[in-house]
Image (tube, rainbow, N blue to C red; front, top):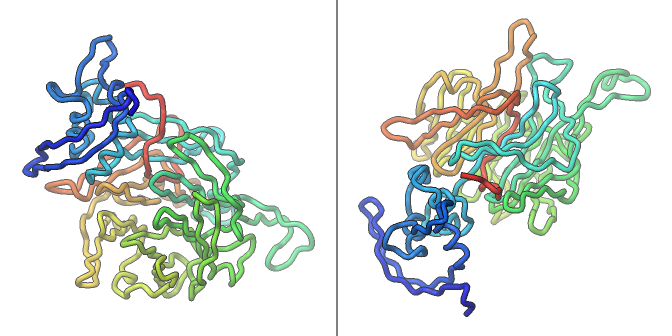
Length: 428
C-alpha cells in the first residue's frame, strides 16, 4: 500500500433524522482527497467535523439530505461539495448528486448561440466551451407567424447531447407546387450528435445519424440515446416510422424496430423515461392522439394505456416515478394515477402558463422555460425561448414551491437539460 493512501475498516453510527445507519466496510481513500478539505484558505488546518477523522466526516456529510444545508458553513464544506469523491459517496448512500441546469442561450443582440450552466449550490452561471459546430439554427418559420421550433437535446447522467435542430434552405431549380422557387425551406441542421462531457469539459462529435432528422422524438434509457420518427430534408414515410439507439460510450448507432405509426413525425418531442421504458405521445397536427411505449429489454413498441394517452395533452415528465403534464395554457399541472387510469389536477397556478421545454431535475423537481406568448398583431411571433427558467418543486411541503432562475445578460434560453455538475475551477 502506498503511504499516500489510507485504508480503513470502519464501524460507526450516523444519525439521519430518525434513522440510524450501521455499516462496516473497507475502503481506500486518497489522502489528497481528504487533505484538500482541511484548509480554510488562511493557512490554518481544520477538520470537516470536529473530533472525527476526515474520512468519517465525509461519510457523515454525504448522508445529509439537502446540499443546501452545507452552503455557507465553511470554505472546507463548500470545497467538499464539488469533490467527485463526495458526489460518488452521496450516490452510494441514495442521496442526489449536485446537478446543474445546462441552458442553450441565444443572444437578443446578435442572434448567436452558446451553452451556459447554472450551479444551484453557488447560484452562479458558467460558460461551456464553444460547440464544435456552427449553430446556425432557425427557431421560427418566416412564412407562419406563431409557429416556433426547438433545438432538441437529451442527457444521460453524465453527458449532454444535442440531437436535432433546423436551418434554412433556399430551394433551387425549377419551381413546383411543393417547392416554388425562392420559397424558404427548412432542413435538419445536425448530421451527427454533439456530445458534451461535464467531467472533462469537452465537446466531441458522435457518429453520423443514419438519417439527419427534424421534428423527431429523442430520449434516454439506460444511459443510451434514442431517436425516432421525424423527417429528413423531405418527409418520408419510412423515416417517420424508423428508430435508432446510440451508445455514446462505443460511439455506435443501432437500428431498432419500426414504430407502427407515422403520427409522431409532425413535432419535436421528448420521450419520457419511467421504469426503464420510453413513453411518447403524438402532438399537434394529429387528429387522433397516438401513444407508444418502447421496452429496451424486448426491443418492442407497444400501445400506450388509453388513460395515460388521453390526458397526455402537454409537455410531460417523470418525477419520482410519477407522470406529470403541464397545461401551459390553463396554468395547470396534472399527475397520472395509474391505479385509476386517470389524470388529476395536482396544482393550478398562473406561473405555469407559457412554461415549455419541461425537464425533470431528478430530485423531485421539474423545470422549464417561461416563454413570451405571441402578440395579436404578429410583432412577437410566438417563441420557444425566454429569459426565465422556472422550477417547480412538487415534493415541497406543505405545498409545491415555485421559484425562478434568471438567464444572465441579454440571453434567451432556447433549450435546457439537467445533469451532473461541470468540472470547473470554482472559487467559493
